[in-house]
Image (tube, rainbow, N blue to C red):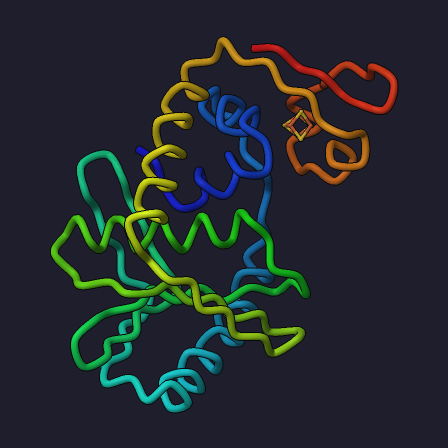
Length: 186
Ligand code: SF4
């Protein structure tokens, strides 16, 4: 199965895809998750009004072949739908964009008319709309092909020291320091 979390991990470092495939997982506490869900519900209701949506679907689970995606919300408009993910960081990251575009991709496969994907950053109250066109569709397809390869291994990664130091999978990965980088082969 490839989920939105797998897509996010891949964008951070392909090695995480291989590490989780081997059965290692980062720990997330229940209290963290409960607090986040309350904030997300407030944001979902707020954006439903501000964006003048006609429908608000909470935490749907969409499956298509071996893909599974669960955006925080889906907003329904007059003639299209948009997946919406709520984030707790100040900055827009590429992995967030890839994740929400992945949800758009699955929804389209299931017959939804998807025109854009949406991100909302709680600390800075920032709304980001990302068009979903053929370019983004091909981008997601490319990521999915590379995730399939990463899951199988035969992978060599090289990441800056700071990135590995902030990686929740460092203890499982145990990469080798080479100058200003860490390297790891699977
Ligand atoms: S510790 Fe570094 S090399 Fe290993 S998974 Fe994390 S980012 Fe990738």
